[in-house]
Image (cartoon, rainbow, N blue to C red):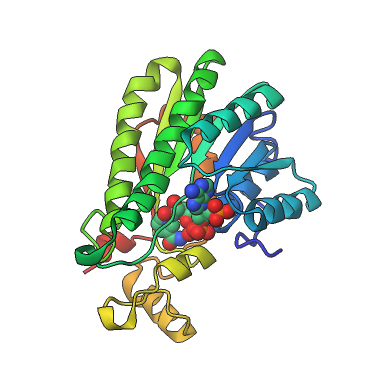
Length: 279
Ligand code: NAP
């Protein structure tokens, strides 16, 4: 299985996260897989949690084949009871849980005027409720072991608004708010809570979700045509290239490491300057 985080080397010390346990929702594909691979390669035991075995089992097997310490579990982050059971099981099995990466999300284009209640609910429940369910579930374990880190994946589309993304932008704005509030509330327990807002990273998942209907007039930034992709990167992303899962994984590793010890409640934009330059 080809990881989208192609690089196997890392700028970080190889034992940076040795002995630590990380739970990564949606850790079997796209950005999440890049995060799983980097954290495991830095010595963490990584638990990949998502709904589909073709994601969590395939990714686990691919990383195990590279000699990394990885396990996986079926989880729908919308199911609060199941989230609690999975978190308790991880904490019991490994004796600790140091890092939660809230990466699971489900997004797609849909006009707000006709967005169905179910579509609205599904995205809010995965992106926002799921982030809260998982964060709340890890709290007690992290508190009793003397601290931990929660890192959530946000986005930048809600900074200025993005047509046909009312559900996702509302959910991710909620994730930002949750990040700041939990950071302040849980700092006395030494739980650091931060978020990362990625710019455009052409994962398989996002290509499906963010291909707008042709009649919408919204620019298809993930258009398959290489030339169009290249010109988007050249004209619209100041640093001149698309992002990779590794770009996000590097920020997760930094925040998870002692280098991030005095960082909480922050939302890091990792996007090559894209949102600032967006017209
Ligand atoms: P992706 O490959 O589609 O990843 C989404 C992951 O979430 C999948 O592994 C999926 O696994 C999991 N997931 C979905 N619903 C779930 C649920 N109910 N319970 C548990 N897991 C669930 O997309 P991606 O591009 O890597 O995105 C990863 C994160 O980055 C998302 O939070 C996204 O909003 C954010 N982001 C991405 C971009 C980008 O350009 N790629 C930009 C900004 C923000 P299963 O299907 O197996 O459940």
